[in-house]
Image (cartoon, rainbow, N blue to C red; front, side):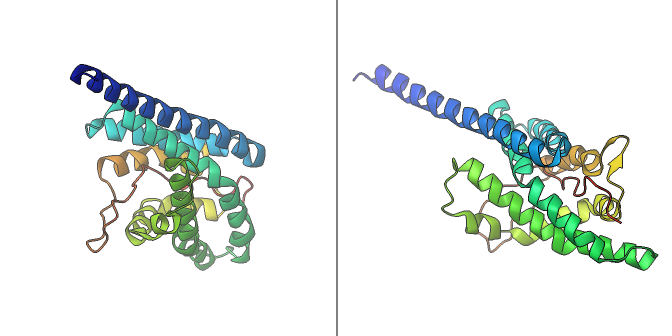
Length: 222
């Protein structure tokens, strides 16, 4: 094989690999949309689209290629839609356990949502993103979830403190949109432009999607 043929063959394989990756992420987005629509309605697609849009623009601002930015956006969108049903169910089951008739009760719900509940979301999201990124291969998923977990948990907990406070206390919509969809776009943009710092002792280059907490309670929690 001539040098020219080798170069063309390498470029052809690279193109095919990229096309497959993009196609798989798009298929994952379609499949998870169907899943979330069947379980929690339009909440997943709306929040996922806000997240993906913010992340896409942020990555382009940072100079990331359109291809890589699109792949990451599809991955984040699919991950949100994949985990939204169990996360919503967890919120519906646990938020009402904390009485919120008083300011102290409302603060307690907010604290729970931004800490333990946030940890459940971050772990689930990272696991779903790993599966999409690895074509449903679960090998290494525990490492993906654990590495640099604290920094990402802290970023989301602080960044979405207002959203957590509102959603946990029954305010599930703002301006006609799911509460966290309103927050999803700007935080997704911020996370893409300013990625979550990687812990110094971690050799893992964190997958830091521009993501946000989805609206946790399609039905107001009381």
